Amino acid sequence: MKISDTLTNQKKELEFSDKVRIYLCGVTVYDQSHIGHARTVIVFDTLRRFLEANGTQVELIQNFTDVDDKIINRAKEQGESASGLSTKYIQTYFEDSDRLNIRRATNYPKATEHIDDMINLIQNLVDKESAYVSKNGVYFRVSKFSKYGKLSKKKTEDLESGARIEVDESKESPLDFALWKFSDEQPNWESPWGKGRPGWHIECSAMSIKYLGKNFEIHGGGRDLIFPHHENEIAQSESFTSEQFAKIWMHAGMITINGEKMSKSVGNVKSINHVLESWGPNVVRLFCISGHYSKPIDYTEDLLKENLIRLRQIETCYYELRLAEESQETEDVSSLLEESREKFDAALNDDFNTSLGLSIFFNMIKTINSLAADEKISKKIAVQALPVLEYMLEVLGIEIQTVSDEEIESVFELINKRETLREEKQFEEADKIRDQIAGLGISLIDHKNKTLWMKKEAIKSEKQ
Image (cartoon, rainbow, N blue to C red; front, top):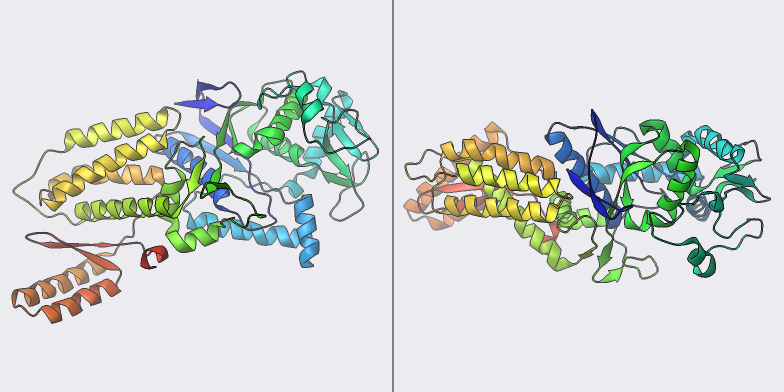
């Protein structure tokens, strides 16, 4: 598998021995998570699913930033403790994540639970003179790391002259960044240099090294984290270990809203909960991987509607195969299935091209649905096709509404009753049966010589 590395701007082979280790920068828990957060997590969840579906063990670490100025300020506004606020939004995050069918990470370390690890890392940097103590805190000395800017492709001289960097006269250079901030305000912790709390960047270095080691396969996050967060992580981590930090840097593109940057000041931030309530988890997942993971995508009603149509095509295909009967007139689909699986895997193996993978997936769906419409889907075909379809659904994280054997039996009883009424030209009574079936969340698929059905995911926006 090859993945484009943000650091080198080249596709790099994902090399590993027994498992792939991934560190994914998580959310700062001071508010509800939004659709941009969802896209990043869905991209890496889909990557993990693909690797695991093909026999690769994945260790995924995703942190929570639960100490930060934003958290402290929001807690003050709402009259609660910083820990109470962060705990609330961590719970909200897990609720959103579970509804999106995100597999739980191997571990979710919190910054506040790893203060000692951060202090030890900072002390090492101070001892090496890669960091220094000032009147406001402990700062990383950027001049000691000659490769600073290698991820973001920024030159230090340009940053010094033109970057919007907070002025702090206690710093040796405006580029130097905080590892530890002195503060008497809660929450704070004791340290060798004075009471305070950690800077944002140091937590991810400390936790990734603790859980995954000095060098691991993939470090991921949104593209907005490239600078300064990930750039600073590289500087402090490689100064600490004297080794390459992550082998591959993988960044998910941003989401715009109707062509505009998502911003609280504009008032166009879409929370995960809001989007889920309107469109449901499957449409959201399809939308988030509809473009190449590294490119931005635009959140529009039209694009979401397109993905809703695609979801309905998937549901139709699944139930056509699931409820297939014996048929005399069939076609050989073995080559279609084999080619679709091979091309799907090839697309994802080549820089995780989910956009291409989805086009291959839906081409297979379209062909199967066309055969079904011509009543050329038999149980023999279904036995061949269902495992391929279910493999792709598992990788994509799409969950089709399922039914029990008892439900199948009762639905077919109602369908047969409806058919009898139609043959007897009692159309009004037949329509009542159809409404009764619809009340169960079942939609009928009328073919020329038979009626099949499917259970559709209820989508609020579809009814509006």
